Length: 296
Ligand SMILES: [Zn+2]
Ligand SMILES: [Zn+2]
Image 1 (spheres, helix red, strand yellow):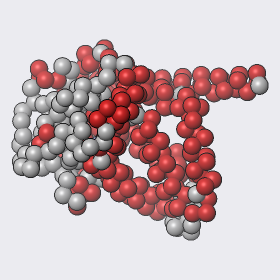
Image 2 (image 1 turned 90 degrees about the vertical axis):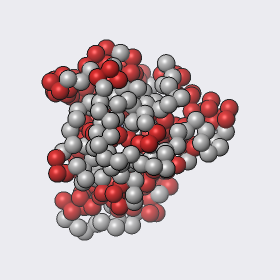
Image 3 (image 1 turned 120 degrees about the vertical axis):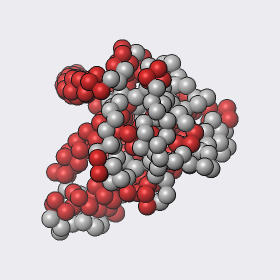
């Protein structure tokens, strides 16, 4: 027993140190690029960033897995073993990786859209949307309920498609890196790839406080899904402000955990419960100019 606790603490210390090193390695170039661009870097001294660091450490240190996530995933994995049909088995490994990324991105688009469409799911997803400033770690600001839901869909896809475990790490690294860049305050549009790849500006519009921008730009990696299904925001201008009108972030991490449950218990999951709706008239290209004051 003592040996198990020591092993667990050792693994957790190692994971925490690795997570901190990764945060530091990402922070330096992103801070430099944001500063050079004139972004408000004082936000790294504020509460939102401290909370996002806490989310990143909670998920990457192993604490989340120890607190039940591992158990949930392994039970589901065992239950779904009969679905090991291996749809992609036998194909070259690079093709398997490419197909998995496209299929996973397609499923992610619809799951993300469902999080905005269904009030119950929105209450949990709103934890990611509520902060009034973004940083490269905001991708980690996800409620544990949403994290488990996304994890289960990911496990299901890996099982059904038969993606070899050797591919899991590189795929996760690519996805994590892109999610990191997308939440940085960089006015990057990726040039001619803007309609194809999700850039920081494209995703920032998804976080816009302006109701006309809501329910748009759901894509995670390829914007083609938004263009295909009519949810792409025609604007290419970063929003003046981010967050959700009338739904400020809970001031504490504990409050952010219980907030969705409390709101569901209090108001139920009636359509529109604390959820802004988009205007029937979408904003056309051009949009507003970014005001420096609004960035602080
Ligand atoms: Zn969203
Ligand atoms: Zn986001």
